Image (cartoon, helix red, strand yellow):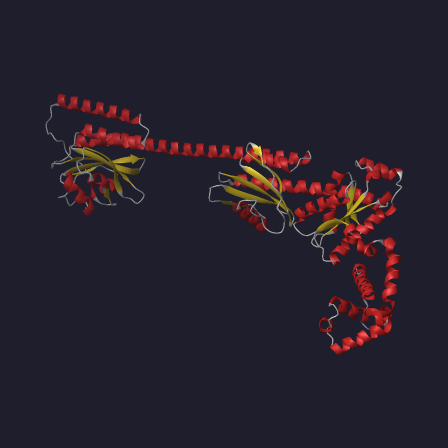
Length: 608
């Protein structure tokens, strides 16, 4: 091992020596210039070993760089014959490379495997044999005070390295280190530039997304300010999100829809009796239900690869509907935020429409109540208020009353108000009843139409009664329609649109003008029984009603009344003593049955 070698020739001719040195220096400078023109690290490494191989003329050259773990790993070679040697890696502190790194100076050996001046690594020694390496020279690649790698020149025969060879390779290594460091800096600069360019592209994309989202938000806000509706919101969403957009109300019915290139044909609205039905794809129904359950957007894909996304329309904890987006591409987070923002705008629009409708209902309902209470003739002020709403009071000839067991009268009143313009009428809530005062030549047909619409909107049973008002007596028509609506429930009719005509046999119950007739009929038939029950706290009226309901069967009657048969017989004896022995005669029995039925219905209708 030597770090201060002598010359290969002891007495060279001075002129020849100078000429050789000039050629070597010229080659060195030319090589250094060629290195400065390179930029890629891999290209620089390959150029260094190639130029070094030509410059020093050894059998092969190779270059190893110091890794983060201190190992020397071969990165480039020239003239090697063994493919395995190109994978060489030397642990820290071993071999000629370890000496070079430790001292920062050149080092060489004339026979690597035989020398004991440097620690050996068995793995590396195993690679030396197939390569045939014997003599080895290593010079440091220095950047400042740091050794970043070692440049090696090797021969396959044993020999020493001359001082001039060491000096020439060291000088070349100095230039090579500079070029390699410049390439590293250039590579880092390029990487940083790429990162900056990528960041700039990301920023541009984010700015574009933000601008698009802002544009959508401004457009949606404009819909509310301009008095637009759900159709316009659906169209705007399709313009920006593509695909198909559907607007659902709180009952699951389609309010509006739009698709790329066309508007969606509206199917029959769904009811609110349950979750979305087969009118929608099952995936759409699922995401709408999930969004409704969680209060946030939801998205899923179906078997055909279509993405279905939904966002709920809410005001506080009140569910108002949903927006549904269906398209082939998976929606991005920005798309979903846009859909949610549109749902918020839709909520504002619904609240605005509701506030306007409620204000109109208050005005319309106030005029409705005045007409139902005062009747004809109407004053000039009332006529002017009706005219401002496009209503001709003189044409209002039908009173409609609607009743539902699942919805309040205020809800039904709002729905009737939404329909009132079709019949140039007034609607609202009067005395706790949803009421419509309309102009129609066919009261029965009007009842059927309104019942059908309310039934579809509510998704539940509803009773509708329409009564023609004679000579502007709207109050009497309202009372008949309202009491007939209640009577229908007592008779087990829960879902029907009708006039009072089919229930004419019960007119004594719901026509206030016939109340004295009903009083006289009940008095003639039942006064004795009613008086006895009131004075003695008995139940003769109830007993006789049950007797007729069970077709005179004593056993069934006693069971229905939960009394003993002897008790029933005693009560019937008391009835006979009060009504006479002929109370079972056909004509008298029929009169009693009708009276008992009317008395029972009247009691139920008068009950709060």
